[in-house]
Image (cartoon, rainbow, N blue to C red):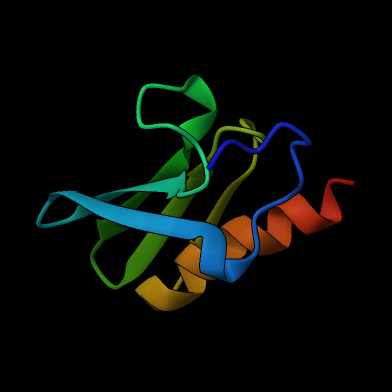
Length: 82
């Protein structure tokens, strides 16, 4: 499904793919795998925290104590950027 309207992702639209045992890519499952709009950002696990790099907000790194909260921040950050 192609998202021509560029509506923000809901939690259900988020796709998390492991890159390693401590890194994940977060994407918009509505986008084609080859589309640059597919990738929303990355999560990196450092010690007891999960650091979020959201491509739409590149100079704002957020940290969370749970992976689930880090993933959910992608929907929250997109909602607040509109």
